[in-house]
Amino acid sequence: MYGINGGNEKMSKKAVVLLMCLIMCLLAGCGKQTDRLSIDKGDETVTSSAAKEEVKNPLTGLEDISADKIKDRPVAIMVNNISTAQPVQTGLTKADIVYETEVEGGITRLMAVFQDVTAAEKIGSIRSARYPYVDLAMGHNAIYIHCGQDNTYCAPHLKDIDDIDLMSKNYGVRIKNGLASEHTLYAYGEKLWSSIKEDGHKTAASSTESWVKFADSQNPVTFENAANSVSVPFSASYKTVFKYDSAAGVYTRYFGNTVRKDYFTKETENFKNVFVLLTTIRNYPDNKHREVLLDSGDGYYCVNGTYTAIKWSKGAASNGFKFTAADGSELTVNPGNSWVCIANSSTSAPTFE
Image 1 (cartoon, rainbow, N blue to C red):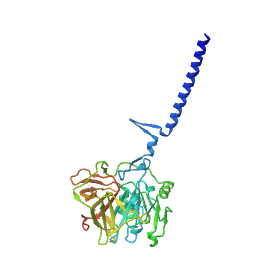
Image 2: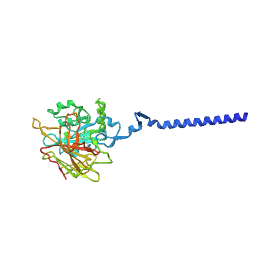
Image 3: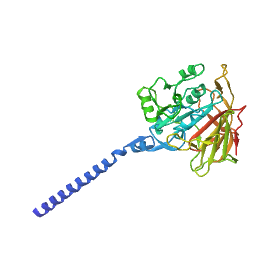
């Protein structure tokens, strides 16, 4: 009997040891999974590590942004585009969308829109607000950054948007660039965003929907009409030109015949998509500032060295743009950043080659 009992005791000890080893292995396995804690979302199971993965940027359709950043409101920044200041522009290559239209005196100004403004080290130089850009920023529910404004027409409209005037806020910095002081104001992306949050601005996005219908990256759209060069004359002295780089699959921006590069990084300004929207642009009663109508009109969409005719509409200031093909079907846009020219239908005749 002793031998049998001793054998059972030895077997029990072995069982206990094996059980303890099994428990330790299971605990070790659980420890490895703590950084991938499962979160039940209906029929989907998402891990916490997925929150750190890049997701589709609603302004570009590219998987180039973190999941937390698509929950933030975009930031729209007024950028100086007078010819003498174009060589000192920076941050445009990091913008998701750039809008260009007339202001006064035959010149244009730019508004760069960022889903994640921290992606740009510096943006500028920054100039004053104008009425149509407030509407454009409102269409993205963006926080609007400027330095001063047209006091006659734009100033009253600023009450309709969450704006930040760098003339009264210490969010920007003057950087010497060889030009007059009014052309030297820049903002650092990281500092700008942290200042926005610290000041208590509402930063949560009201929607994460894409601003256009993006094509599947595996099935890009291309059109029949050639657009290896796109020229948009805003006035007698201001002509924006885009030349297609077939190797890179993007359009490089020129001012006339001069290629535009980032002042600090020296990168050429390249954009995947180019829109030309035609509308009525006329003087306000002061016969100086320009009124840009943003109701609806005809236009063109250029991508991959080709173009097609389109229709566009916006309407209310808070509305975003809607683009359709000539036949009225929803326009499909290739993923990538976009430059949007809004030009005078009666004086600007864009050309494509």
